[in-house]
Length: 373
Image (cartoon, rainbow, N blue to C red; front, side, top):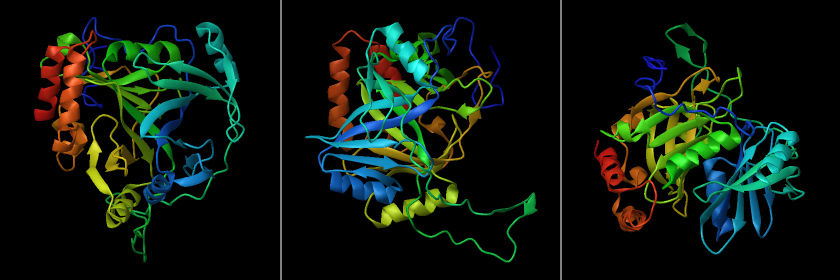
């Protein structure tokens, strides 16, 4: 549908023959992302950062820590004690338990009961990049917590704040919910199609490496298909790269003041900002990226786009300067081009080029152009 995104949220729509961004007959259609799982060697240190970042604690034991937002539902991050820090997988929420049973039947995998503190049913899958993927339903629902109230704003359209001031305190930006997960894959196209065909997701935006549109997309922002009900611009994002890895995860806060004041709180306690504050192009979110004590990237966001299932994918070049409408330039830390990451990146590139996958020499050249553009 060429031109579908003109003046909307991307450069333009698809050309004839390009990826449609959706499956004709998915097995199920998931409702949302549920939680992420990580292994961490030091849960005390992890909890200190989590509280400063704005999470609540739903469960604590010597071996597990369940982190939650203010919205009702399940915990949005599960940390388990392990010998090293690693991303251990994602859980996606099915519309109901019938969909979990349907996945089990279609894919030939057993239905499992989740641990009692969580409740409900799950099926355990593995995506083509090797990531553990649970599809879950019927969990116990944690009650909602009080959330931060957005600041009342005086705008050019009217004055809502009279005889009052704005004084946001420097406190943790209270996390409301898990918004999205970003993954890198050496088998990007196969992994993308798996999520569309298996979980019924839709592509909101495709990005292609500079000068390589004819090779197909190199990144996709993927949302849930809720029919006419608007869904987050992306619940999952996938990018082609030299390693199969976690890139970052994002957690919603109420507004720009909460995001900014929460960032000051993190900075005052010695935590490291990776990139921000700014506003993205694809998804339009206000963003602020931080490194946790183990080096994993996490994002505060607010004010993201919502799309229903009528919108076709947008297409745009993948460039570092094209990641934000305003804000500071993308940092070398965020782009993984810093001296800290250089050795690991070089090793990943050499390893990927020696194996049969989608990351070939031409794609490497394209990726290098992204960081320089």
